[in-house]
Length: 140
Image (cartoon, rainbow, N blue to C red):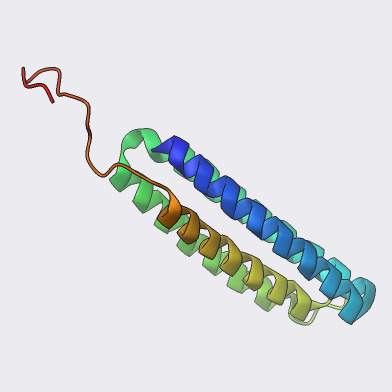
């Protein structure tokens, strides 16, 4: 399961990196250095959040799918709350363009999520365990 998740994460991260680079250029072109800084900060925030999710899933994977799913959902909700708080705190910042920051973060999150969905759908995954149960005496 973890090997499949690693493939999904790599594919989604690649798509997100491309879009993040585009958003950084757009931020710099449309809002100058403050737009560039805002886009870089938005990208950094998503990268940190992405890393936290991957770490939590990896750490909880050994405990089984229910624990992994609960940890993933809890982490997701916590990140949404943190993102809303950061956007609220920085909305009037003069150090960077807060709109570019927020837009970059939102676009990167959406691309990352879509990338994970697409990679998951395209991946051929077994839905049943094809290995024989060693204790039952039955063989496949």
